[in-house]
Structure formats: C-alpha cells, structure tokens
Image 1: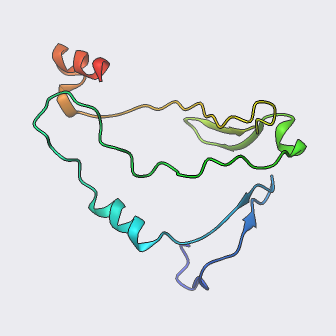
Image 2: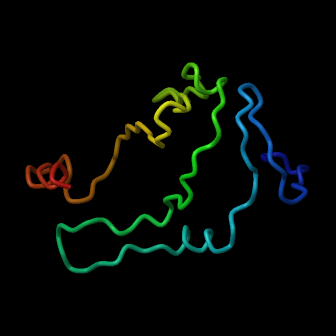
Length: 125
C-alpha cells in the first residue's frame, strides 16, 4: 500500500495466498483492538520479579479446521527471511494446535548483558 493512488475499497472478502492457496481474511483492525495496542500499559505493582501481565492478544478461538491432505502430507515453506524460515504443516493425526517458536530478545532492561546481576535476572525471568 505504498502507492498514493491506491485507495482500499473497504473490507475485502476471504482470499487465499498466491502460491500455496492458504485461505485468509483481509479485514481492518477494530477500533477496540487499535485502542488496546496504542494505549496498553504494564501496571507497576512495585515488585522487582513478578509474572508478566496477561497477554490480551492471545486468540480465544482454537477450533481445528477440517482435514485437508494437501496441507497435512508434508511441511510447506511459506516464507524465508534472512533470520528465519516459516513452515506450515497441519496436524490431522493428533488434532492438537501447536507451534514451535524461536525468538531473540534485544533489550537493555535490568542491565542485561552489562552486569552479572542483570544476566542472572534475565535467566530467572
């Protein structure tokens, strides 16, 4: 949407990905979600070590889609970046939603990587 001449015509109906035909819905964020994303604050309860606040972005619907041999046979490479690859394989055998996620966190909070106390704090967290 970098072109100045492109004007979206409202909510698009269900579409599918160009090469692998994965279905998706293209719809704008609701005003409520936009407000949560922009104005969300982590409450400070005065504790130095505590559980993180609840994640308001977790999905509420974990229904499993019907079996589809095309997506269940072998993993499919969806996209590649310099840092990682995105693969997809539907689990029709055990019907369990699952994900394997790896992440690198770059932060200077709590003196992580600067002091020994900061490193221990990060490993405990």
